[in-house]
Image (cartoon, rainbow, N blue to C red; front, side, top):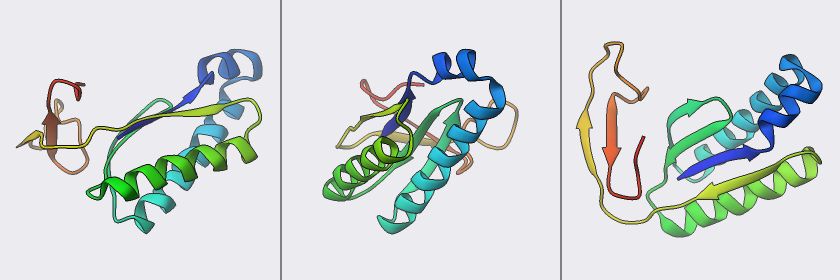
Length: 115
């Protein structure tokens, strides 16, 4: 699952780094609360983007809906875009060196899942 804030770069340019950082922190905080509820796992954060793994497809869809609704109520300037993939993917341990991209110590890939 990927989620990001639509228009985040424009908000940063218009309102400054501090306000944009506050928006991102709120987005991440709420996303983490929702992930805990659906037993999801945060894979990584990049800028205004979140990548997570949620085992149950119905829970992933509910996560996407809840995250989008929260953002619409909280941030009139930004919408949340969410992309979901369901199915098997390959995973490998990445270690802890400078090329490691996941706090969980693994990477996943499949044609629609690339980073």
